Length: 120
Image 1 (cartoon, rainbow, N blue to C red):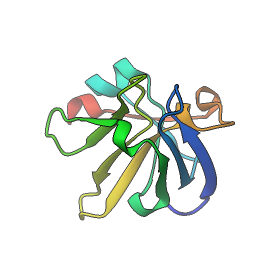
Image 2 (cartoon, helix red, strand yellow):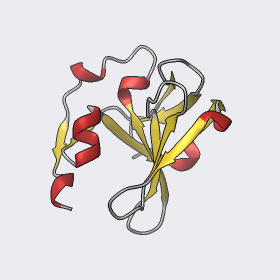
Image 3 (cartoon, rainbow, N blue to C red):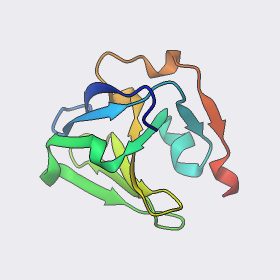
Image 4 (cartoon, rainbow, N blue to C red):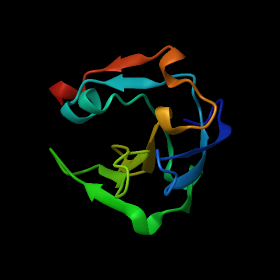
């Protein structure tokens, strides 16, 4: 997760939720689980300590589904999910960042890996 990390800023659509993150964009993922597919996420993962919420903590709501192991956090105003919190199999805390929410990044132009989340 840490090979080519760079600093990015991002936000939800209405900018009530703003964050900064150290992130590697060389291996983004498109997942076909029921949430990711419908939301159109392009994701990259980093250590939880690499994502800093700058504003909007009080404007975040949580959605849990399936195994209820990932905290899907979305803006109460515009509904956009900029990131989620979870853990690696060894328990290491991670953040899954929706690359569509990063400033100056065209997530749809990135070469992505496909992940079969629908089968897990």
